[in-house]
Length: 227
Image 1: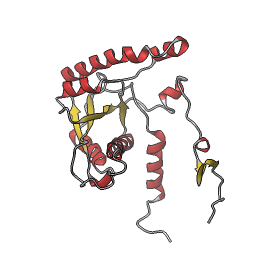
Image 2: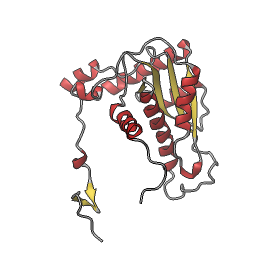
Image 3: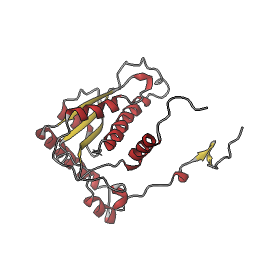
Image 4: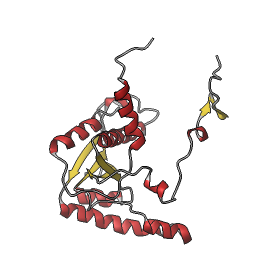
């Protein structure tokens, strides 16, 4: 017997569409800033994320200052040089053509910061897997990302950044950890497929490649559950 209030078919379609069409957006941002009421809706969606022990170990730094974004962009350029040096030959050439950030193009950036020392939640669920606190912050990022897609807002995650340099630039206390640096804004369009797949950097695996049944060494077989 089903419980709770089920979503309508239209609501279900919207949820799965947001998941399916979410993209890591690096280009096509328009200069119009997002209105405050929309930004607060997105941040409230992030703040509603599940968290171990209900600790909610996140902080959000909204960045609209061009001066600060230029400083962050400089950090990206310096960090990206080292990241590119890892590759060689055709892969290095392809890497050089990738658009990996939109720090100056998006009208606002957002840094999501993790507080590992938070006592909120009284350490429930963290004694054996303390990393679940960090995972909670990632859940908040995903919540925001899906809500943004439903609102027609693009989000791009810039991971090629020096965390310590980011902390210095944004005056983040040394005991906190930057988890996600995001570029947000309205965009001209959303790609029909992930950008890295479109340019041939990598291809999405099939669910069947990563699905197991009961044991890791047993492939999933529909309807083959055991007592």
